[in-house]
Length: 377
Image 1 (cartoon, rainbow, N blue to C red):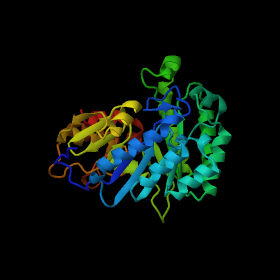
Image 2 (image 1 turned 30 degrees about the vertical axis):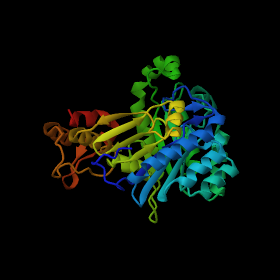
Image 3 (image 1 turned 60 degrees about the vertical axis):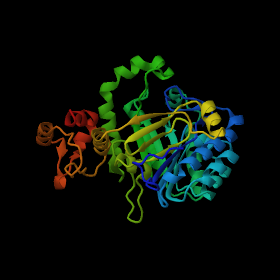
């Protein structure tokens, strides 16, 4: 196994772990997933742990965050999931994604026993007809039951995922979804505009309706921000909100590190790593992944070289999603900002420059990508 000299041993403080298995593939999903295949979960866990051992030299002695995503990590067979969680490095934040229908008292106890500190629960909506459009397995009562089960197991950091812009969703539906989510008093909420990727079943079935409601999305985003900030949540990233808590940090620490441009290691089929001047993507075939690691080889992957300008563009694109100022004038950074555009956007009230940094104003954040694109033109 080669070790690139540009990444020092023990330099990486953030780890992503991909468990791809799901009970069902939703029509809008374009993540690397594998439906069912319970007979392969154990072998996959073994392959993933083999990759982790091959790459462990990259990890710092004090890993700051570990995120277990998928797929539906909590659909993984309990013995396989237990093996993976037991092998993960100690960390201050161990987060995992969960679908509500997989959350049982036994599953919650397993997660708590193995040090999981944060659970991201995929609610998406509380309206049964909208969940049907999304092809979700869990119903509203499953979401509520899962949240209460996690609370009973001792979890005090729960995030709920919601989507808006679902075909057939009205403003009243969105208001009701937000109210139902707030009633569960989650520490964190992620609220995403539904994005149906080209080639998915969802785009084929609902593409025209999605296109027709694009103009409504800005008003829906404003509705989300207003409702959640009025409820006392901090709008700290374009789609993410957390409760203020003077005693602890409730922002999603793993995602926050990546939005700030930190390097991270990803293991598992389809997992991405950003390691200094390169980005690696493990290829999406579970069979090829398991076979390669079983033969003592690295998994098949693509490698992309990243120059300083590309890294700086990515840092700005991600960092401008946050509510904190972004440093732009430090020595050694590529200057990728359009300074004339920056001045225009400041004058228009879409960008501000606290302490010489750059931050989008609330209005600029709602416009988001358009403002960032102008800054980086």
